Image (cartoon, rainbow, N blue to C red; front, side):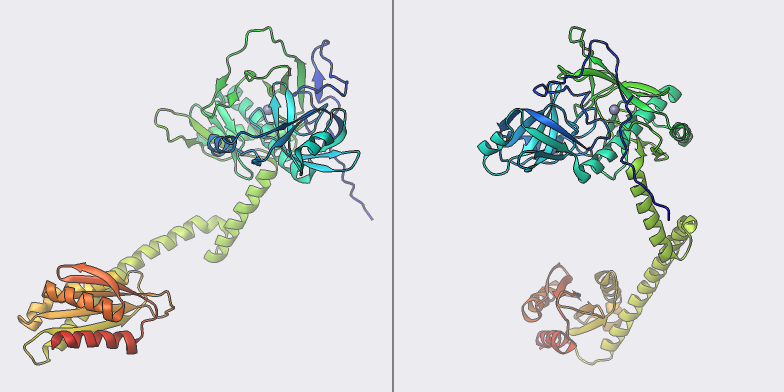
Length: 508
Ligand SMILES: [Zn+2]
């Protein structure tokens, strides 16, 4: 019997390359290793380490509101509670502090002495060091005590944290590949990029739209490199703080982009991410050690931005777990629609446009027939009244049971036909017609519509008022027309009788 053995992927030993003889990774457990050479990049899931410092911090009240506004589509950092938080610096960590357009990781800290587990809600870079934002359990002083300097802890991503990070790393590494190809093959720089919330496609913003051919050529080139399995590694050296600071370009959201370091990046290391033979780019994010698993899918057109002052456009892309999720959901949508339309997915556009065309024709036919029917109804009801003897007010009620999408519109057509023919059929006798319509199935929430027309505005108003009071129809009107709505079950024995009584009263 064959047995499959799942190997935990490990970061290759040559992933981190120290490019300077002067740079050493601090081994003193009382010293915090600067961001850029932390163990968090990229595949380690948990690590035993020690606490360097811990403080209790009251989050500013406005912080939550501010972060909501700043990031529209980009991944929002997990929200922080309003209670005090524990800020913990460790000697080393597997929890990535947000940076380089990549959001924060989440995870846990377990105190080795008592096995207590603490939730890491966010990690942020303070200067050149990672700070873990830990949820305080119970008393703040006790929490502070649990994380006394030198305390041995296990820092871990956990399954949820690793899945989140694996997705972020996949999209981030693909972004490097995509931006490099756009730049070198099409001379199109990346102005910014957004790591959107899973599972939406991420995008790069570029200064102009791209043709479908350009998009396809970049996708083909990227996937050729993916097939080759180009390796990724990082090169680190000490940060030269004496050098002139490079101007950091920023996007509207204030995110630093391009080949420079953030202004507040102090005390860390200089770090360049290299895709073999493709790209070298300063970046503090986490990246997969190879692009071999990162089949790239580019949405086949760029999206022009609505801002009129710019020709900037967005190119959306998918890779890794998001690509599989996207394929699954688009497949399911196509399969469900195919089942409804009884055809294979390739025929869907044709079948759907057929149905839309047919529907337009049917709608026109229904409109024509309704107009003809309205004329016919008007003639019948008028002819019927004309045969009745008398001199005074002609008053009658016509009730219809029908399932129309626009019942009031149809009654309106009947009413117009009645008023245009009244003179011919009724000579100069005053008239009053109540028209009503109810759907064939009714519940307590069903609406029936009522329309009144008459030769005398005053009588129309009078009957409208009476219908409100005696039948419970809500409505109003102007001049010779009054319309209203009845909610509930319309019964011939009740509502029709009540209307007949109102009309009889009017006539006498
Ligand atoms: Zn990066």
